[in-house]
Image 1: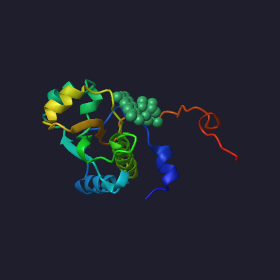
Image 2: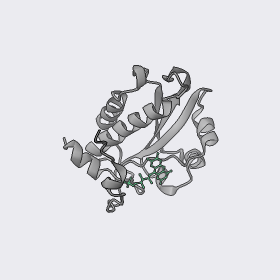
Image 3: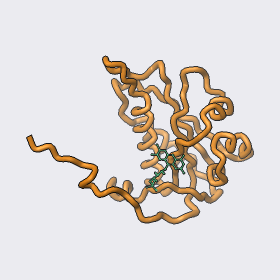
Length: 170
Ligand SMILES: Cc1cc2nc3c(=O)[nH]c(=O)nc-3n(C[C@H](O)[C@H](O)[C@H](O)COP(=O)(O)O)c2cc1C
């Protein structure tokens, strides 16, 4: 068990994976942690699709055409279930926010298990819907591979905190 500050610092976008399998108990823990994520009005308007990549390289590369995407033994797709999400009175739909929190929980839990991940938003949405057989109203939001890293973390490049945080002193 790692301190949450260490986890946040350790996580990075892994773009090379070993083929080594992910233990079933790690996968179960990771999806359980993801499903504990808070969502607006506790609606839980999401579905996680766990895909074992073995033998499915061709279909998966239709979704995101990078060799490293299919190197890991598992790819996970986080989807929004649009009809179930909370909508604010001014019409703002919180489905994407909810799915992002779920994915962040999943990714930090994976990091805690020593596993690598990478947020993928630049996928082909229509290919994802077709390959995964998603019904209308189930919208793929993000993918991540899940597996052991075969690359090394790079130093984090971020804007200075002072540029990103404003302390309002009323
Ligand atoms: C919503 C979102 C979508 C992203 N989509 C992609 C993507 O399609 N392909 C990719 O290689 N990285 C993608 N990334 C990873 C970012 O490029 C990466 O998180 C950022 O450069 C910071 O690097 P780090 O994750 O190593 O700290 C995405 C990240 C987020 C949060």
